[in-house]
Image (tube, rainbow, N blue to C red; front, side, top):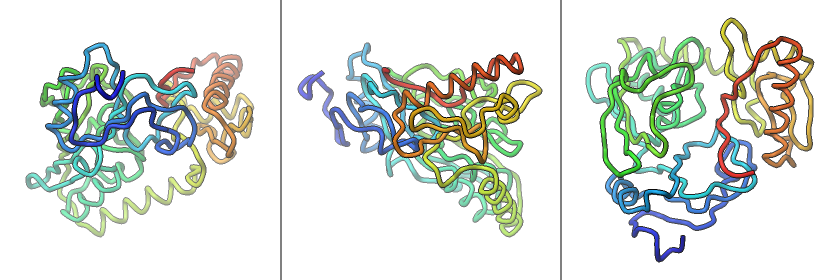
Length: 297
């Protein structure tokens, strides 16, 4: 695809765009095209006019993601400032843009005396990402607070989906390929800002104490299997601190993989597969990836 064959946009369309700087692991190849739409209409027009066979993928803060070294074919869509607003929509409801961060959502909820969204403070992603993945932490998940969301389908059509139609299960939704969450409404309960802040502080401190937040990491690597904690299975399999190339299983939290500085994405993914093998051998449990792996090896 050349610039001449791509739809015209008002936002920013970049060919062969490096993705490593945009993801937490700081590794991986380029996007064939990176599109940062000017606004909702720009995104809709672009997807409508883009050849239907061209794959489309949304990229949020790049926290829960391995971009493979061969890069990502088609178009990667990144929602910028135009999609990052959070406003009070009703008494206990926040209207959130798909590009808004979990920290912004939880802080806005606090300022408006809305409790129940404190856990979003600890999810290192955007509304679009954690709405797609039913993100969760500290005993709560997105499906507990979301009322509905606005989604641009691959055809460019804008639809509003109630939470009941999202097909939510643990870290999964039924959103079709190429669909992009551009906004969501979250409902909380009445609370007072100091108490909400105290809960946010408690969550932040627990996260700081247990997770390697100062490292190049991708967040929780594996889903917790029924009746188990992934980190305990990984630890029991003797994988704490295990390395491959520049990748390492975190010493601090064994469900986190780390780029120690020189890792390429294939190191990180292969280390994850080694961990899965060891856990299978020691516990008989087949760990499932929570981190999304995209692109070509």
